[in-house]
Length: 329
Image 1: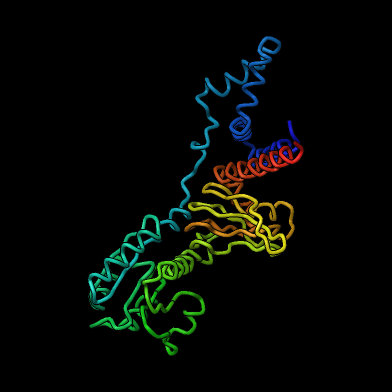
Image 2: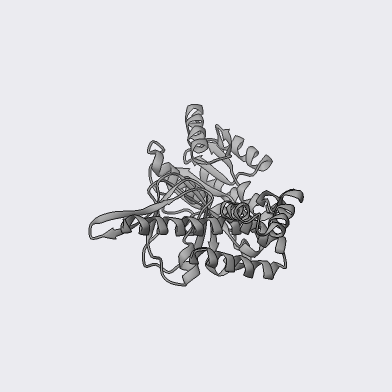
């Protein structure tokens, strides 16, 4: 077995000892090395029938207790973060409301969008279903966007507000603009700009102080990690795609892509060094942002995420071995 696989085995053993769960250890180990183990057992059946019988009895007669789906616990914190997708769109133009609703749903998976044609209508809907993100026309009739924003500050749900205004209001919400709770947007015709405002609003909503980890939203071609930076966070990709690259002079050298279900930024956590490469989104992305100092605690409580980390490390090792093999031929 290669050194990289031995390292993964050692990590699994440490985790299993911590949890005192050997079903967990054998289960994940078998999931990762199933092809090699099956080949080994078939080749050694004649010589070690007791070993083969033991493995197949354990994994197949017991109904595959190692299947990771059986370990995926209901995560109330993640369910709460993922439920924060309620939007309110309030402009006096019904066509604009529909356009904004379509834009939001194209940018945010699972978004629920309500619309209102005046401030009074919007206020009533806020009372019935408090939104997590409100997009308000600055010139909203009946109840102004400024007054409505003030009311949203006192809702029991955290609410981020995007105010559609041709000019940035320099007099209102100075502190909230700095934190990202309030944003001013001069137009919605540029999809990427609108998407970045939506992403920042959702980031503010999900970034509650008591949460161990948060959801983070990025638009296409946004930087996530820069080479040489201190590694404060590790990320698990929920949706979208990113690329890792380095600069060779003025040339950009692509190191690989990161897909949904993989970790990114994990190597700096493991070796304790600064970031070794740049990472940038290639599509709209949704990530789980985990503080590096909390990752051990999170992984110990989430077997499914531990498996995602192991698969990511296995992929990195395989890509590295394939590259070495290619260069030696």
